[in-house]
Amino acid sequence: MSDSVRFPLLLIGQTVAAVAQPFIIESPAKVAAVWFAQNERATANMIGSMSNPLGLLLANVLSPALITTDKHTATDFTLLLSLYCAIPLLGLLMSLFGVCSSEPPSPPTASAAAESESFFQGLKKLARNRQYWVLCVVFGSGLGLFSTLTTILEQVLCPRGYDDSISGLCAALMIICGVVGAGVAGVFVDKTKMFQEVVKVSYAMAGIGFVILAILSRYRNLDAVMVVAAGIFGFFGFALYPISLELAVEVAYPVAEATSAGLLVVSGQIQGIILVFLAQALALPLSGADAPYANCGTNGDIVPQDNTVTMLVFAGISCVAAVVQIIFLHPEYKRLKAEREEAEAPKAPTYNGVTI
Image (cartoon, rainbow, N blue to C red; front, side, top):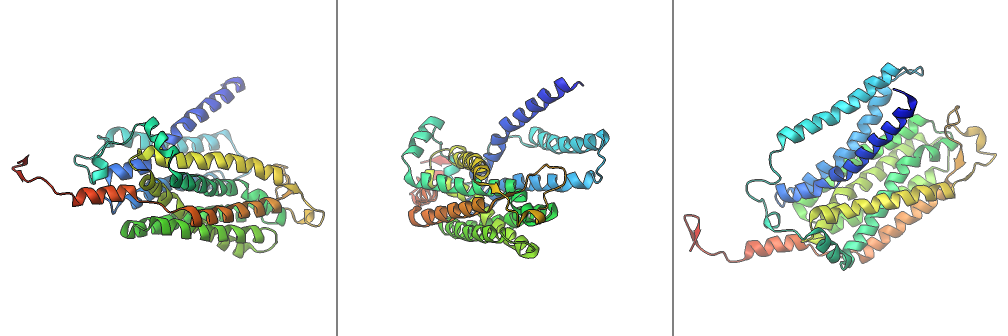
Protein backbone atom coordinates (compact mmCIF):
# COMPACT_ATOMS: atom_id res chain seq x y z
CA MET A 1 0.00 0.00 0.00
CA SER A 2 1.45 3.35 -1.03
CA ASP A 3 2.17 6.17 1.42
CA SER A 4 -0.39 8.37 -0.32
CA VAL A 5 -3.12 5.90 0.66
CA ARG A 6 -1.92 4.81 4.10
CA PHE A 7 -2.06 8.20 5.81
CA PRO A 8 -5.62 9.12 4.67
CA LEU A 9 -6.68 5.60 5.67
CA LEU A 10 -5.16 6.17 9.11
CA LEU A 11 -7.10 9.43 9.49
CA ILE A 12 -10.34 7.72 8.46
CA GLY A 13 -9.77 4.98 11.06
CA GLN A 14 -9.03 7.53 13.77
CA THR A 15 -12.16 9.49 12.85
CA VAL A 16 -14.40 6.41 13.00
CA ALA A 17 -12.94 5.46 16.39
CA ALA A 18 -13.41 9.02 17.67
CA VAL A 19 -17.05 9.07 16.53
CA ALA A 20 -17.70 5.75 18.30
CA GLN A 21 -16.00 6.79 21.55
CA PRO A 22 -18.84 8.93 23.00
CA PHE A 23 -21.27 6.01 22.68
CA ILE A 24 -18.97 3.97 24.93
CA ILE A 25 -17.81 6.62 27.40
CA GLU A 26 -21.30 7.99 28.04
CA SER A 27 -23.06 4.61 28.39
CA PRO A 28 -22.17 3.55 31.99
CA ALA A 29 -24.62 5.96 33.65
CA LYS A 30 -27.45 4.77 31.38
CA VAL A 31 -26.63 1.10 31.86
CA ALA A 32 -26.39 1.54 35.63
CA ALA A 33 -29.75 3.33 35.77
CA VAL A 34 -31.63 0.80 33.62
CA TRP A 35 -30.12 -2.51 34.76
CA PHE A 36 -29.11 -2.08 38.41
CA ALA A 37 -30.86 -1.57 41.71
CA GLN A 38 -30.57 1.58 43.80
CA ASN A 39 -27.77 0.15 45.97
CA GLU A 40 -25.74 -1.06 42.96
CA ARG A 41 -25.78 1.88 40.53
CA ALA A 42 -22.65 3.74 41.70
CA THR A 43 -20.59 0.53 41.66
CA ALA A 44 -21.90 -0.42 38.21
CA ASN A 45 -21.13 3.08 36.91
CA MET A 46 -17.66 2.86 38.43
CA ILE A 47 -16.87 -0.46 36.71
CA GLY A 48 -18.02 0.82 33.34
CA SER A 49 -16.30 4.19 33.67
CA MET A 50 -12.97 2.76 34.82
CA SER A 51 -12.73 0.30 31.93
CA ASN A 52 -11.58 3.13 29.65
CA PRO A 53 -8.51 4.23 31.68
CA LEU A 54 -7.66 0.59 32.38
CA GLY A 55 -7.61 0.01 28.62
CA LEU A 56 -5.24 2.95 28.19
CA LEU A 57 -3.01 1.56 30.92
CA LEU A 58 -3.02 -1.88 29.28
CA ALA A 59 -1.97 -0.37 25.97
CA ASN A 60 0.89 1.53 27.62
CA VAL A 61 2.07 -1.67 29.29
CA LEU A 62 1.75 -3.95 26.25
CA SER A 63 3.47 -1.67 23.75
CA PRO A 64 6.95 -1.61 25.36
CA ALA A 65 6.58 -5.27 26.37
CA LEU A 66 6.01 -6.39 22.76
CA ILE A 67 8.51 -4.01 21.15
CA THR A 68 11.63 -4.16 23.30
CA THR A 69 14.40 -3.11 20.93
CA ASP A 70 15.31 0.14 19.21
CA LYS A 71 15.33 -1.59 15.79
CA HIS A 72 11.63 -1.86 15.21
CA THR A 73 10.45 -3.91 12.24
CA ALA A 74 7.21 -3.91 10.31
CA THR A 75 6.46 -7.34 11.77
CA ASP A 76 6.70 -5.98 15.31
CA PHE A 77 4.16 -3.26 14.64
CA THR A 78 1.90 -5.65 12.72
CA LEU A 79 1.81 -7.93 15.76
CA LEU A 80 1.13 -5.01 18.09
CA LEU A 81 -1.67 -3.55 15.97
CA SER A 82 -3.19 -7.01 15.43
CA LEU A 83 -3.42 -7.46 19.18
CA TYR A 84 -4.99 -4.02 19.56
CA CYS A 85 -7.56 -4.97 16.90
CA ALA A 86 -8.29 -8.37 18.48
CA ILE A 87 -9.33 -6.93 21.84
CA PRO A 88 -12.07 -4.59 20.50
CA LEU A 89 -13.14 -7.34 18.09
CA LEU A 90 -13.78 -9.57 21.10
CA GLY A 91 -15.84 -6.77 22.63
CA LEU A 92 -17.79 -6.40 19.38
CA LEU A 93 -18.61 -10.13 19.28
CA MET A 94 -19.66 -10.08 22.93
CA SER A 95 -21.98 -7.11 22.33
CA LEU A 96 -23.47 -8.64 19.17
CA PHE A 97 -24.17 -12.10 20.55
CA GLY A 98 -24.18 -11.54 24.33
CA VAL A 99 -26.41 -8.48 24.65
CA CYS A 100 -29.93 -9.51 23.66
CA SER A 101 -31.98 -6.70 25.17
CA SER A 102 -31.71 -2.99 25.91
CA GLU A 103 -33.41 -3.41 29.27
CA PRO A 104 -34.11 -6.18 31.79
CA PRO A 105 -37.42 -8.09 31.84
CA SER A 106 -38.54 -6.13 34.89
CA PRO A 107 -37.23 -2.68 35.89
CA PRO A 108 -35.04 -2.81 39.02
CA THR A 109 -36.28 0.60 40.23
CA ALA A 110 -39.16 2.98 39.70
CA SER A 111 -36.89 5.45 37.90
CA ALA A 112 -35.81 2.74 35.47
CA ALA A 113 -39.45 2.14 34.57
CA ALA A 114 -40.20 5.86 34.11
CA GLU A 115 -39.98 7.59 30.76
CA SER A 116 -37.01 9.94 30.35
CA GLU A 117 -37.27 13.39 28.85
CA SER A 118 -36.55 13.77 25.14
CA PHE A 119 -33.08 15.05 24.28
CA PHE A 120 -34.04 18.65 23.47
CA GLN A 121 -36.56 18.85 26.32
CA GLY A 122 -33.83 17.59 28.59
CA LEU A 123 -31.44 20.28 27.37
CA LYS A 124 -34.02 22.94 28.19
CA LYS A 125 -34.36 21.62 31.73
CA LEU A 126 -30.60 21.42 32.19
CA ALA A 127 -30.21 25.01 31.00
CA ARG A 128 -32.34 26.15 33.96
CA ASN A 129 -30.70 23.85 36.51
CA ARG A 130 -28.06 25.89 38.36
CA GLN A 131 -26.84 23.00 40.50
CA TYR A 132 -26.23 20.92 37.40
CA TRP A 133 -24.12 23.65 35.79
CA VAL A 134 -22.01 24.08 38.92
CA LEU A 135 -21.32 20.36 38.83
CA CYS A 136 -20.79 20.38 35.04
CA VAL A 137 -18.23 23.19 35.04
CA VAL A 138 -16.36 22.02 38.13
CA PHE A 139 -16.28 18.37 37.07
CA GLY A 140 -15.18 19.43 33.60
CA SER A 141 -12.27 21.38 35.02
CA GLY A 142 -11.22 18.37 37.10
CA LEU A 143 -11.41 15.96 34.17
CA GLY A 144 -9.64 18.46 31.92
CA LEU A 145 -6.83 18.95 34.45
CA PHE A 146 -6.39 15.20 34.88
CA SER A 147 -6.28 14.59 31.12
CA THR A 148 -3.91 17.51 30.53
CA LEU A 149 -1.56 16.44 33.32
CA THR A 150 -1.24 12.92 31.92
CA THR A 151 -0.55 14.48 28.50
CA ILE A 152 2.19 16.90 29.59
CA LEU A 153 3.62 15.00 32.59
CA GLU A 154 6.80 13.94 30.78
CA GLN A 155 7.35 17.49 29.53
CA VAL A 156 6.95 18.74 33.11
CA LEU A 157 9.37 16.26 34.70
CA CYS A 158 12.11 15.66 32.14
CA PRO A 159 13.60 19.20 32.40
CA ARG A 160 14.28 18.44 36.10
CA GLY A 161 16.24 15.30 35.23
CA TYR A 162 13.51 12.68 35.62
CA ASP A 163 13.64 10.03 32.89
CA ASP A 164 10.65 8.66 31.03
CA SER A 165 10.41 5.65 33.36
CA ILE A 166 9.53 7.94 36.28
CA SER A 167 7.01 9.85 34.14
CA GLY A 168 5.47 6.57 33.01
CA LEU A 169 5.35 5.22 36.56
CA CYS A 170 3.66 8.40 37.81
CA ALA A 171 1.05 8.24 35.03
CA ALA A 172 0.45 4.52 35.63
CA LEU A 173 0.03 5.01 39.38
CA MET A 174 -2.37 7.87 38.80
CA ILE A 175 -4.58 5.46 36.87
CA ILE A 176 -4.10 2.41 39.12
CA CYS A 177 -4.65 4.32 42.36
CA GLY A 178 -7.50 6.17 40.67
CA VAL A 179 -9.29 2.92 39.85
CA VAL A 180 -8.86 1.83 43.47
CA GLY A 181 -10.21 5.18 44.69
CA ALA A 182 -13.16 4.99 42.32
CA GLY A 183 -13.91 1.46 43.55
CA VAL A 184 -13.88 2.53 47.18
CA ALA A 185 -16.03 5.59 46.44
CA GLY A 186 -18.53 3.58 44.39
CA VAL A 187 -19.11 0.96 47.08
CA PHE A 188 -19.28 3.62 49.81
CA VAL A 189 -21.82 5.75 47.97
CA ASP A 190 -24.00 2.74 47.16
CA LYS A 191 -24.21 2.01 50.87
CA THR A 192 -24.57 5.58 52.20
CA LYS A 193 -25.92 7.72 49.30
CA MET A 194 -23.45 10.45 50.36
CA PHE A 195 -22.85 11.71 46.81
CA GLN A 196 -22.25 15.32 47.76
CA GLU A 197 -19.86 14.57 50.61
CA VAL A 198 -17.74 12.15 48.58
CA VAL A 199 -17.48 14.52 45.63
CA LYS A 200 -16.52 17.51 47.78
CA VAL A 201 -13.94 15.65 49.88
CA SER A 202 -12.44 13.96 46.80
CA TYR A 203 -12.13 17.24 44.89
CA ALA A 204 -10.56 18.99 47.88
CA MET A 205 -8.02 16.20 48.38
CA ALA A 206 -7.30 16.01 44.64
CA GLY A 207 -6.69 19.78 44.65
CA ILE A 208 -4.24 19.40 47.52
CA GLY A 209 -2.54 16.57 45.64
CA PHE A 210 -2.20 18.75 42.55
CA VAL A 211 -0.63 21.53 44.62
CA ILE A 212 1.89 19.05 46.05
CA LEU A 213 2.71 17.79 42.54
CA ALA A 214 3.13 21.36 41.27
CA ILE A 215 5.57 22.17 44.07
CA LEU A 216 7.54 18.91 43.81
CA SER A 217 7.89 19.24 40.03
CA ARG A 218 10.18 22.24 40.59
CA TYR A 219 12.84 20.11 42.28
CA ARG A 220 15.18 17.30 41.25
CA ASN A 221 15.91 13.85 42.73
CA LEU A 222 12.56 13.36 44.43
CA ASP A 223 11.58 10.20 42.57
CA ALA A 224 9.86 8.34 45.43
CA VAL A 225 8.01 11.38 46.74
CA MET A 226 6.86 12.32 43.24
CA VAL A 227 5.49 8.84 42.63
CA VAL A 228 3.61 8.83 45.96
CA ALA A 229 2.13 12.28 45.25
CA ALA A 230 0.96 11.13 41.81
CA GLY A 231 -0.73 8.11 43.40
CA ILE A 232 -2.54 10.27 45.97
CA PHE A 233 -3.72 12.68 43.28
CA GLY A 234 -4.95 9.79 41.15
CA PHE A 235 -6.74 8.10 44.07
CA PHE A 236 -8.91 11.11 44.85
CA GLY A 237 -9.06 12.53 41.32
CA PHE A 238 -10.54 9.40 39.76
CA ALA A 239 -12.86 8.81 42.72
CA LEU A 240 -14.70 11.87 41.44
CA TYR A 241 -15.45 10.42 38.02
CA PRO A 242 -18.21 7.80 38.50
CA ILE A 243 -19.71 9.51 41.55
CA SER A 244 -20.00 12.83 39.70
CA LEU A 245 -21.75 11.08 36.80
CA GLU A 246 -24.22 9.50 39.22
CA LEU A 247 -24.70 12.82 40.99
CA ALA A 248 -25.44 14.49 37.65
CA VAL A 249 -28.22 11.98 37.03
CA GLU A 250 -29.63 12.64 40.52
CA VAL A 251 -29.53 16.43 40.08
CA ALA A 252 -30.99 16.41 36.56
CA TYR A 253 -33.69 13.72 36.92
CA PRO A 254 -35.91 13.06 34.94
CA VAL A 255 -33.53 14.16 32.17
CA ALA A 256 -32.12 11.12 30.35
CA GLU A 257 -29.05 9.67 32.02
CA ALA A 258 -26.95 9.69 28.84
CA THR A 259 -27.69 13.40 28.38
CA SER A 260 -26.93 14.59 31.91
CA ALA A 261 -23.84 12.41 32.37
CA GLY A 262 -22.67 12.82 28.78
CA LEU A 263 -22.57 16.61 28.97
CA LEU A 264 -20.23 16.33 31.96
CA VAL A 265 -17.80 14.31 29.85
CA VAL A 266 -18.12 16.81 27.00
CA SER A 267 -17.34 19.62 29.45
CA GLY A 268 -14.19 17.79 30.52
CA GLN A 269 -13.08 17.23 26.93
CA ILE A 270 -13.60 20.86 25.96
CA GLN A 271 -11.80 22.19 29.03
CA GLY A 272 -9.01 19.66 28.49
CA ILE A 273 -8.38 21.00 24.98
CA ILE A 274 -8.28 24.56 26.33
CA LEU A 275 -5.87 23.58 29.10
CA VAL A 276 -3.49 21.85 26.68
CA PHE A 277 -3.19 25.04 24.64
CA LEU A 278 -2.86 27.05 27.85
CA ALA A 279 -0.01 24.78 28.96
CA GLN A 280 1.82 25.44 25.71
CA ALA A 281 1.32 29.19 26.08
CA LEU A 282 2.57 29.27 29.69
CA ALA A 283 5.70 27.16 29.12
CA LEU A 284 8.92 29.19 29.41
CA PRO A 285 12.45 28.60 28.10
CA LEU A 286 14.52 26.44 30.41
CA SER A 287 17.04 28.38 32.47
CA GLY A 288 20.76 27.89 32.04
CA ALA A 289 21.01 26.43 35.55
CA ASP A 290 18.47 23.69 34.79
CA ALA A 291 19.48 22.94 31.18
CA PRO A 292 22.38 20.56 32.07
CA TYR A 293 20.01 18.34 34.09
CA ALA A 294 17.32 18.01 31.40
CA ASN A 295 16.60 14.40 30.47
CA CYS A 296 14.18 14.76 27.59
CA GLY A 297 15.74 12.29 25.15
CA THR A 298 18.49 12.65 22.63
CA ASN A 299 16.46 12.63 19.41
CA GLY A 300 14.87 16.04 19.91
CA ASP A 301 11.32 14.75 20.30
CA ILE A 302 10.80 16.91 23.38
CA VAL A 303 12.30 20.38 23.65
CA PRO A 304 12.99 21.04 27.36
CA GLN A 305 10.89 23.89 28.74
CA ASP A 306 10.15 25.22 32.19
CA ASN A 307 6.55 24.33 33.09
CA THR A 308 6.63 25.77 36.61
CA VAL A 309 4.13 28.52 35.79
CA THR A 310 1.90 26.00 34.02
CA MET A 311 1.75 23.69 37.01
CA LEU A 312 1.16 26.51 39.48
CA VAL A 313 -1.66 27.96 37.35
CA PHE A 314 -3.25 24.52 37.04
CA ALA A 315 -2.93 23.99 40.79
CA GLY A 316 -4.68 27.33 41.30
CA ILE A 317 -7.49 26.29 38.95
CA SER A 318 -7.97 23.03 40.86
CA CYS A 319 -8.13 24.89 44.19
CA VAL A 320 -10.61 27.47 42.88
CA ALA A 321 -12.80 24.72 41.44
CA ALA A 322 -12.73 22.83 44.75
CA VAL A 323 -13.73 25.95 46.68
CA VAL A 324 -16.54 26.75 44.22
CA GLN A 325 -17.88 23.23 44.53
CA ILE A 326 -17.74 23.19 48.32
CA ILE A 327 -19.53 26.54 48.61
CA PHE A 328 -22.06 26.47 45.78
CA LEU A 329 -22.90 22.79 45.19
CA HIS A 330 -25.96 21.83 47.27
CA PRO A 331 -27.70 19.20 45.14
CA GLU A 332 -31.15 17.69 45.57
CA TYR A 333 -31.26 13.94 44.94
CA LYS A 334 -34.30 14.06 42.68
CA ARG A 335 -34.10 10.48 41.43
CA LEU A 336 -33.83 9.01 44.93
CA LYS A 337 -36.69 11.26 46.05
CA ALA A 338 -38.91 10.09 43.19
CA GLU A 339 -38.13 6.44 43.95
CA ARG A 340 -38.87 6.94 47.65
CA GLU A 341 -42.19 8.64 46.90
CA GLU A 342 -43.11 5.83 44.51
CA ALA A 343 -42.31 3.23 47.16
CA GLU A 344 -44.34 5.06 49.82
CA ALA A 345 -47.36 5.72 47.59
CA PRO A 346 -50.44 3.59 48.43
CA LYS A 347 -50.89 0.75 46.00
CA ALA A 348 -54.25 -0.40 44.67
CA PRO A 349 -55.14 -3.95 45.80
CA THR A 350 -54.72 -6.69 43.22
CA TYR A 351 -56.08 -10.22 42.78
CA ASN A 352 -54.22 -12.70 40.60
CA GLY A 353 -52.21 -9.87 39.11
CA VAL A 354 -55.33 -7.81 38.25
CA THR A 355 -56.01 -4.43 39.93
CA ILE A 356 -59.28 -4.49 41.84
